[in-house]
Image 1 (cartoon, helix red, strand yellow):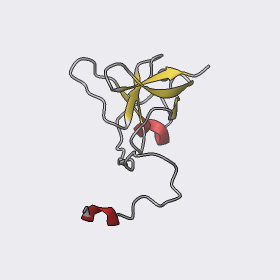
Image 2 (tube, helix red, strand yellow; image 1 turned 30 degrees about the horizontal axis):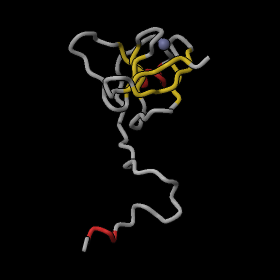
Image 3 (tube, helix red, strand yellow; image 1 turned 45 degrees about the vertical axis):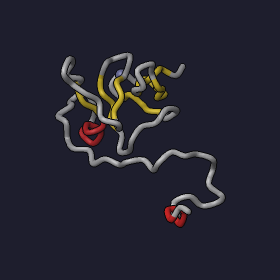
Length: 104
Ligand SMILES: [Zn+2]
């Protein structure tokens, strides 16, 4: 017997995925000045060694800016790097982390 089975999180019609719901994030101003003010909180400068990416962040492979999302990023997500106007797709890298590839 498993009393946990009365969960209501997965309707019978849900598409086949075991993934938990995405976390959402409150984005604060980062002081990033290379895009118009209303977009600034979606980007930040990568600090280099010692810096870490949150689950809602990915680095632009073109200009190395950190792109931030309001929700947790997953492989297959498309993101846009406004500073260098690159369209990117989120992929899982060999380390199990997330990185972005340019979409041509
Ligand atoms: Zn970029």
